[in-house]
Amino acid sequence: MGKIAEIEGIIFKIKRFSVHDGPGIRTSVFLKGCPLNCIWCHSPEGISSDIVIWHDQSLCIACGECVNACPEKALELANEPQPHVRINRKSCIRNGDCVKICPTGALQFAGSKTSVTDVVDEIIKDILYYETSGGGVTLTGGEPLNQPYFSKEILKECKKRNIHTAIESCLFTEKETILAIMDFVDLFIVDIKIFDGQQHIRYTGKSNRIIKDNLQFLAETGKSLIVRVPVIPGITDTVENKNDCEKFVHNLNKHIPIEYLNYNPLTENNYKRLDIPFLIN
Ligand code: SF4
Ligand code: SF4
Image 1 (cartoon, rainbow, N blue to C red):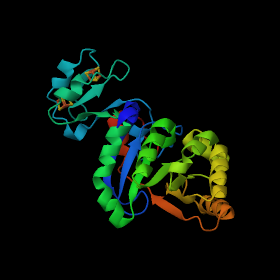
Image 2 (image 1 turned 180 degrees about the horizontal axis):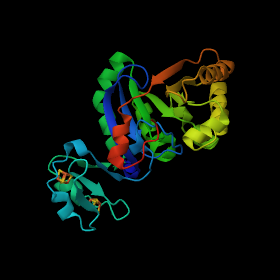
Image 3 (image 1 turned 45 degrees about the vertical axis):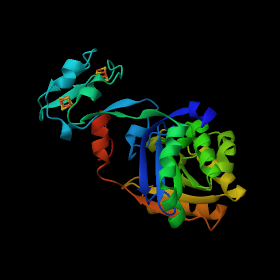
Image 4 (image 1 turned 180 degrees about the vertical axis):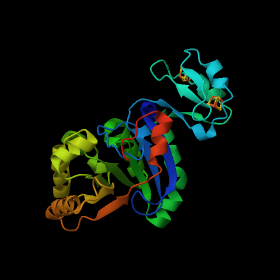
């Protein structure tokens, strides 16, 4: 595919036959890196821009192969509460020797470097399904606008092939970034999470001022929009938050649909696999 083959980004998943990320049957591409740090994030492996090691204890048979293979002595076997591998992430140089040798797939990389060409080749496998179902491709994450150039090139290639494009974003980005990609996006799916500014900082680490401004900007352009609010018990599911979010969105344009996304109680396991504390009780 010539020059675009040189453009690379980091993704952590490609999900084919997705039916929850926009209309019809879609391929969802999950890009790494997010400027927010929501304490309930369903995909904590997507928050860091770096490729990291993912350890699934339920698959580990405590054979010790990885411990012996690691040149940095970053791994050790521990016995409590059951035999498992402990990772010293500061010592890990991510060379992947442990991933290669693990016989059960308990050790994996969360994330891989890939090219626009490789992503587009995967997307076009299902082009017939998109055509018959009204589907397409959705860039999600993480935050796709965290890798704006990579995202833009994927979207551009999809539009060349007449594939419907959606981007799922928190909109915590510069307006210039949105302007640079918007011609290649058919549908923006935007999370607004928490309306109150202080509460937003408390639970996501960042102000929502820029998000509200960008959402207003997008609504004024007339682009197709869906707003999503995650339903997190005790945090975003209050009547006040829902009312404030709905009022804000409907004041922008009463035709913008609002969807509520249910909290996934299995999320905690993903935090364990990355040794990240899970702060929701
Ligand atoms: S990726 Fe390499 S350095 Fe890191 S734990 Fe595995 S073998 Fe050790
Ligand atoms: S190689 Fe895999 S299965 Fe064996 S101890 Fe390491 S993580 Fe567990």
